[in-house]
Image (tube, rainbow, N blue to C red; front, side, top):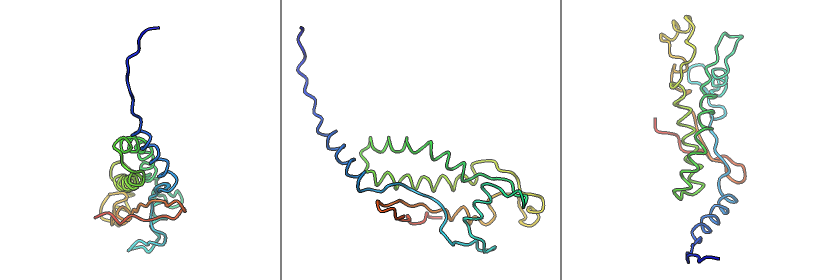
Length: 166
């Protein structure tokens, strides 16, 4: 048998990082969410923002409202980004709790951006006359500006992050 080089590998940093990750997985945030605050109402119509969001996202054939899937588009975009965010941030040594907060903020930003990042069905002529413009989803900007994000504690309770600066 031939000679082997005498190489010493120190795995102590990897062991420490693994132990830290194990502890954070047990005690840290369990996830992130975004959405609208329950009971928050549109200033002009008095309708719940969450209902307005759902109707706009999926459409309402009975009222001739076409789907404008801003939530679906954002969800799909977010799903593609989360693994990359987690990988990059873990490699940089960021804590899992901090990563979850970043993901929650990114989710919120992505949803807000999805209002204008995609081409949606135009408003009906009657809607254009009523609103004076043809900007689907962007009448008062309240729906866009009211998107909130939070992190889920180990006990399942949602902690809302402070609102974005508008």
